[in-house]
Length: 228
Ligand SMILES: O=C(O)COP(=O)(O)O
Ligand SMILES: [Mg+2]
Image 1 (cartoon, rainbow, N blue to C red):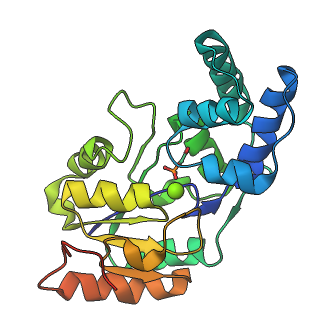
Image 2: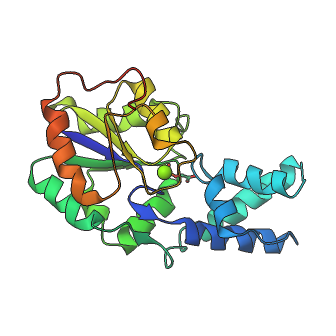
């Protein structure tokens, strides 16, 4: 199968690095620091959205400052890898899936350079045939364009698609792309897990290979309504 993974909150717990960068950018503008849960709640729609949330939270509306903070964020993002950990059993599971003949890719709203940098830092980049980021030029998730693009790059010969992610954004992306969705429940989601359209959900990556086997055999892998 073509197994496409979200990155932040799915394969990696990157919120601590994103939090550190956000506070450096805030401090440079004289803005008060943010706590980790607040920044975590801003993750998922890419950098411009996160910067926008920071500004709104501090009562600022200034397009030029937003562009400047966006640039400052990007300048620091690629080297901000030291506080990020993969979720437990991610590396071993990716190896298991790859040995079983699946092709793996990443579709994230994080820009491509920091996405590749953190995957390289964690020794995971080589697991993936393709990585597409939020700065690809296509509309960001939940628009299905980047997921469609990465699946097209992998080629239909690589098998049936599935998307694995942690958030409502990922569930909506998969649903509008018509791709079965598997929800990792330990990431940065805000909605109740049961309320998102999904083929299945898991809290431990060791559960994933069996779910993928179940999906490969499923006759009705596209739930049109949320699984309860
Ligand atoms: O950069 C973000 O805001 C989110 O990234 P994700 O798509 O990997 O969850
Ligand atoms: Mg995510």
